[in-house]
Length: 239
Ligand code: GLN
Image 1 (spheres, rainbow, N blue to C red):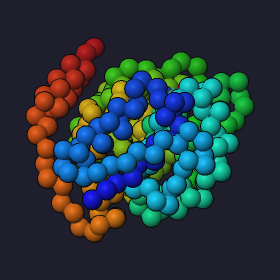
Image 2 (spheres, helix red, strand yellow):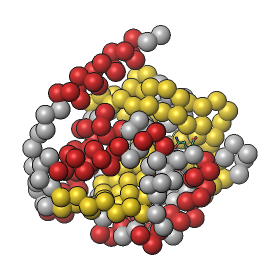
Image 3 (cartoon, protein in one colour):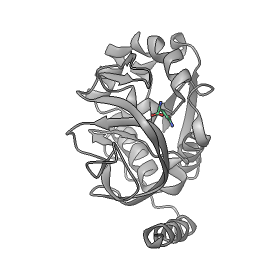
Image 4 (cartoon, rainbow, N blue to C red):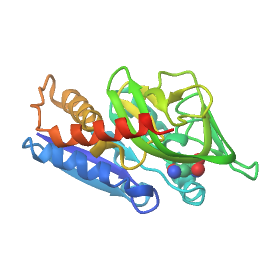
């Protein structure tokens, strides 16, 4: 079995070691004998969304975001079709903001989004920064780190409810989006090594879509569990 991962703009959208998400997907495939091929999309011509099993868009600063906005727009319809068809997709921070209608910069200018979802993001004074804890209906406890000026507003199913931290906008107690097999989130840090259950969900959905019903065998995640529980207790009890 083989999975192809399209990693969008790995040099520009790689804040806080988001590349760790790719390494996690590759290792968790390798440990199960699944081959993974990573296609680094440096210019939009490198992308082959129709053949991709997993799409990854990382986070970037406002500057980097404005540099790749026009490029991503060129494949808007392919991305929309892939997401609707259930391709596994992970979009982090700036990558998550791209999915909506627009991102309003601190100077008031709007960067157009891909308009794949009916939501918007507005940058407001004061960054939402720090460790974050979520309770997710699908994934249980999720831990991470957030640092964003943008506030995102929507009424889709979130990735989780905020237990500690700020989430989508610091107001409504929601974090991220979970739509079909797409996860969009502000959690950097990176997300997948700390939350391997999300990595496995992206992998198993991708395999199922490609090969039919495939059962992933469990990996020994006891160290990951200890680390997560430790972070959870420390942050939940921090004043
Ligand atoms: N431009 C975004 C913000 O500050 C992106 C930040 C990020 O990807 N960490 O809201």
